[in-house]
Image (cartoon, rainbow, N blue to C red):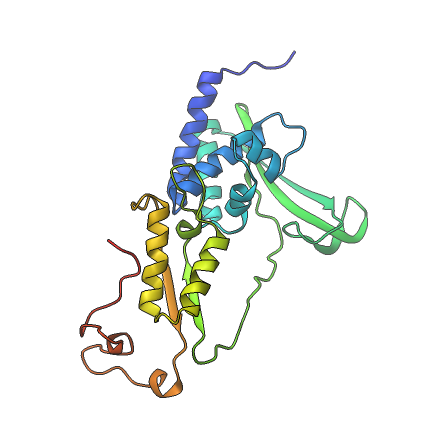
Length: 271
């Protein structure tokens, strides 16, 4: 006979946990999507991946869930620590037991975190596999995994490129491409790239190109940004300009732009 669950109490505890980790997400959209993602993991789905979890959450595509796991800004280490504190607060007693378990999974590809050729007890030899060490906190009240950090630290890919005079570099936050209109449609990467390419092709200087881009972003959201939307656009100047030292008083290249009042900085978004 299985144990029964008080759904009202479960919902209360779940919302308490999500409230505890809410501050680890820099934007509201990833925070809400993380909640939906966890509910999808807990749901009785025949298969669990970004597509099935997105469908369970009512999304029309898996892009949002994939963005949460690959590009969104949130602190996974602090979420892990918050979860550990939450487990101890709810299950703690005077005689807890820490259970250490090494688990190996054989993999065919390289797209899973921590995958590499290594020894795993699952196969009894060196194989392409994922090996993790889990730490479980157990008491008479229950048990829960509190530290799934057992994957090897794989190198972070670093991309380098040499910029030529006239080349531009654009950095933006998620709020630019993930900002949605009243019907829930995101601004999107394609439209973002198209706007930048068109502004460059029109020969617009950096400040005006950025103004045009941010006007499109704010118009997408009904002229009212609902989340952080930051963009930084910079250009590689010729050596005679890039090599100048700033004048006293903090003047430099930015202050030398045509029509730029001395001592001011360019805004990256309309007020």
